[in-house]
Image (cartoon, rainbow over the protein chains, first blue to last red):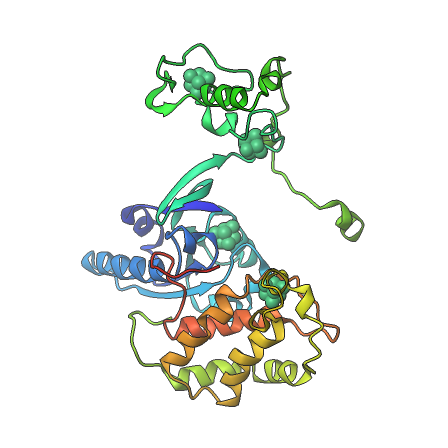
Length: 224
Length: 131
Ligand code: SF4
Ligand code: SF4
Ligand code: SF4
Ligand code: SF4
């Protein structure tokens, strides 16, 4: 799931303060679940923002709405009838949703209320952990299910780097486990150390340019 | 979307929302011949071993269908009652197939929107279990 957190109120205020009518749109998907941009968070942000703006002499009209997903146009039709009535839109979705919104309403300024932080897992309610940087060439098969891109401070494919401390933490931060120390021990326990005994060649970093993906069975449908 | 949580609902606002898609939604609700073909195209229905509460048509008929039948004259407990049906029981994946072209997720999306307008939506930081 995509994990996001709300931007500081002052930053949001600076984006929207000069627009009189602002519609704050939450997302019913990931950002609802990670407690950053669902219906409750839309209400809280609107309340706080209104108070702040009123205190500074503005007279904003700040409304809220939530669509089930901002990354799929199938969910936009109710919003289509509303956006024209506002001077700006604030989106509480991830960066994907904000961009979809901005593309859908090119004449309306669309602002992000959140910082999109990572692709993560739910450890517990309100506690999320990054586990994948969507590198596009997954190596988990060889690394015992531990991602070296995300969990090694240097993103090494041939580790460890020599900076592993005796207690198994990384030289970069004493509270961070060394990913390669963990990879080594997991593979050793599974009798698979052979997986990391050959040197991996340098890889193509596919995430340097914008990616898109059409699944094999659909290639014909979208061709040309 | 209400600014504060209330225990009452605004039936006039619900009726207005229902009317905004009256022709389209009533037509598709009437078109459904209860054939059940959509059932097996829903992975949740299959995963729950054929529990009818996960059948695409069931979810819509027992939420939006009732809202139209009652012309929006329902109370807050009605929305609380259909919450599981339209959130937990459907992930809006758009994978269900209806041979006469009924767009089930579009109707569930609309039902969720009506729920939200009355302050009913999933509580992701509470004790609700969604699967
Ligand atoms: S717009 Fe972003 S936050 Fe919302 S459902 Fe899509 S990916 Fe998740
Ligand atoms: S190697 Fe790591 S970053 Fe790359 S796809 Fe696998 S889990 Fe994601
Ligand atoms: S100590 Fe381990 S985690 Fe830290 S940079 Fe080196 S290999 Fe990576
Ligand atoms: S959209 Fe809902 S009803 Fe249709 S297949 Fe997906 S989960 Fe099932």
